[in-house]
Length: 244
Ligand code: MN
Image (cartoon, rainbow, N blue to C red; front, top):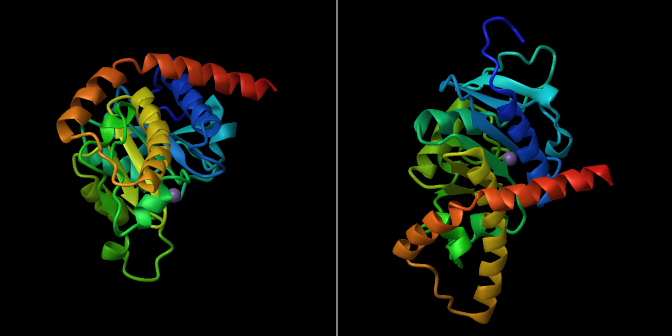
């Protein structure tokens, strides 16, 4: 590590490695997608793996970045094209400590539907609040883009679409979950995918009654207070899978 960088606690790196493995094990990310955490001692930096599949990340692969996406200790290693998602949100949202970007499959249809927003079907996804905002990249990039958040300007536009929400849909691409802790960001990314599946089933039955905004707020407070329970389960499950 270069001498001008502050090393975060080993536990922060360890949790970020676990988050990568959990998100793969839970089907939120595949070869693509990424998870970051704000540097605990330096609010203007964040930690994110080098360009690689999340399921194979180790502690040695975690790099530091400036909020404008500049990698600080990458050396010859390639970095994620869409790292601007993370830095732009950390800059716009001081309350956010972790970000998960994915293309988790059940969520994607809600990014393209002109009629259906992603709404909280049950108490486990109260963080979806009054419904997820949508990032329409065409409004910023124009027609003909590759849909990727490949520069700081597009990152800023995404952060604007996210606003004060916990989750933003990205049209024709995927989604991004944010939270005040790494464990909660992972929880929200996993349950957004579950909620999307449940919402499609509820829509097949017809005319679903979603959580009200007040119910969503109350449910979020009670379920997310227990985030250590799913984290411990998912971490053990991911570790067992890696041994097989
Ligand atoms: Mn992407």
